[in-house]
Image (cartoon, rainbow, N blue to C red; front, side):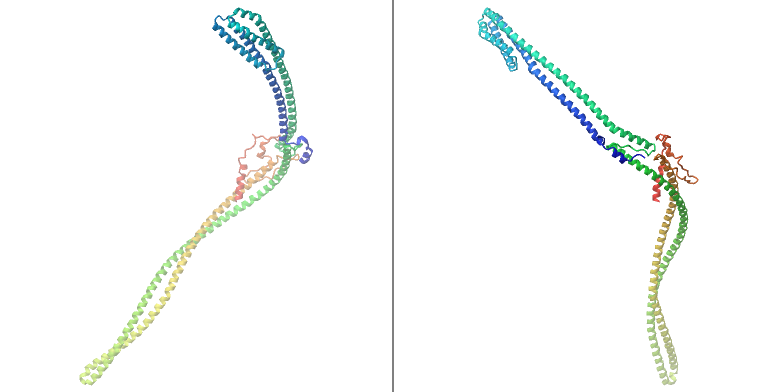
Length: 573
């Protein structure tokens, strides 16, 4: 096992290597910028010197040469105008020529006034000033008066004798001044050329030094950064081949060094994770076998429960039919009880009226009894009167006797009828009392029958809800059976996935040795597939040398891509 990353980091501490890459690049940029600034400053200084020399060349040499050229031209113009004065034939031409001559002299004086402040050689300048002053004096004092007087012969003689020597002196001084300024300009040009050569050599030297220094610093940074990166690439290549026993040799604490340290830590964690995953895969395989058995038992129990639910549902349907019949009977009974209560009420009213009629009949019978008693008394009086009458009253006595007997029988019959009427009144009153007692009971019976009908309706509703619940229970039971079957299939696929996972983990090597062998083979039944470490499709993407071949890698379009969906179904179950 390689030394720990902490030891490598402690060993790699020191100096420039530990600086962050950004600071290294900033240092390189600072060096380059410093060199660029140095080269720029030198170039600017040299350009400034060249500018000064060029300005001096223009102001002190070329400008003076230009002014001297103008002075020479103006002097030639003065000589031409002087000749024109000598050749004038009329007074008008003479006057015009003199005016033109004066203008040319003034122009030369103006240019000389601009040239005179420049630093010049005093000898040549003094010679020109002396000759030109004498020339102007000669023009003013002699030549102009002679020309104005049209004394041409004397004018020409004076020009030949006096003007020509002065003209030669003026031309000589101008030639000397021009030669001197031309030599000064050439000297300034030579100085500028020398300064250019010096600046070029200095700038080339600085650029070469900057390139060498930059190249040296870049090479140092490349070595400080590139070597750890190559080591990191080597470790990552080994990781791609499944080798987890390689580590980065960390020699710095910059970003690359921290990346190497992080990679070493990740490899350590990955090694532990691979070991844990292999162990977990084995445990998961055992758990999937247990889940498969439990799901099969659950499926069988769900099937039995579904049958029981169907039987219970049939019984509840029969109970529903009975409760519905009871509800209908209770409704019919309620109608009968209501009708009976109404009829009993009417019967009670009829009995009350009968009792009243019986009482009235009894009172009428009492009147008849009184009438029979009075009739009997009248018959007795008639019998007495007939006895008093003797023979003449016998027939009347017989009639009175019969009337008395009839009155007695009427009285007896009236008494019997009165007694019967009194008994009927008592019976009718008893019947009325019984009816009055029966009516609340009948009404109570009607109310109870209504409650029974309502309870039967509620029972019918409850039984219907129970039927619905039993139907839902049946559906849930069927879903449970289906889910248990899916769970069994999921368990089979989980077992297959654990085999694939273990086969995939078998690709990694920790400490130079291969990982554990293939897990237990899972037989999913007649339609199940057997998985092992030797025929795992996950190894199809790796060649014999341990390199990953993307073109030969399998596409996980089967059970591998369905694992998440199956796990979600298992969680929902």
